[in-house]
Amino acid sequence: MQQEQVILYIRENLMTIAMVSGGIVLAIWLFILFQVTRTRREVHKICKKIRRYFDVILAEDPKEEQQPTEEPVSDNTRIPVYQVAEEPSIEEQKAEKSEEDIRLLMDVISEVF
Image (cartoon, rainbow, N blue to C red; front, side, top):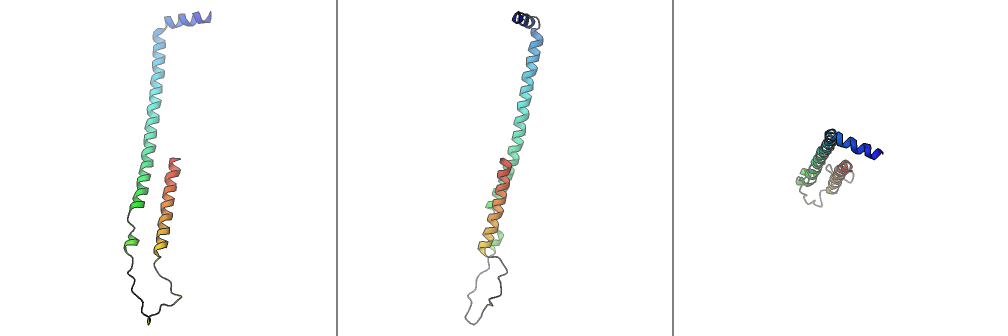
């Protein structure tokens, strides 16, 4: 009994049903467009951060270029034991750079996930 009423309603109001179904399809397409646009923006932001990370990683470190030349110390010239070198050693510079790289990488990973 109810099926007959539904079929009769569809036959009488075919244009209204077509407009409603068209509106639903249009709403779905707009939702998909919105999601794709939002995802594209997020991916663009992540790519910028990754590019910045690689720029920092691949950039030449100016501290490494300005390494002082070591002069041989003669036996007559002695350096006091308590005197500490003013510039950090190469290992310390590499450690600082690797820590900075790790922080940037963690920022990028946290943005992605």
